[in-house]
Image 1 (cartoon, rainbow, N blue to C red):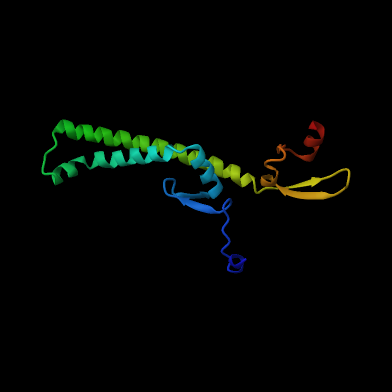
Image 2 (tube, rainbow, N blue to C red):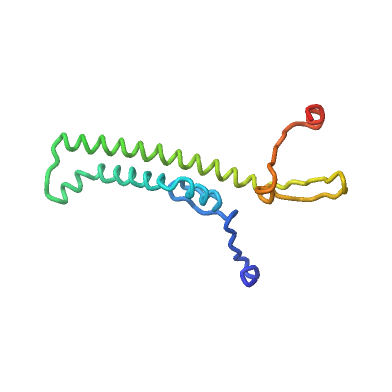
Length: 151
């Protein structure tokens, strides 16, 4: 109860965390879902990024070790650096797109629904998240006359 008094309530699901690879914030729920489903992707992204940095700095590393890289070695390191960087960008953009999609799906869970019970005449308010394990939500979009005609 003390955390409510100071306004420091921790919300596991709808709170936001900054993602360093995407340079933006996502809901914690989306990041948890992503990390549970894709455990090796972040490692692959970091490996490609590290390889790109090491290959790009190969000549500086060789100078530090007091050796000289041949022209063929320099070209090889340049090709590996460019290729690894392109793979890093591709995997990073795929990961970001997947996180954006999951973040939108999680945001839908906050939408409010009002159910009018025709038998009792009562109105009940829910969020989509409340109905996740109980009922399937179907969304139909259109103006009133279209919906009446279609249904």
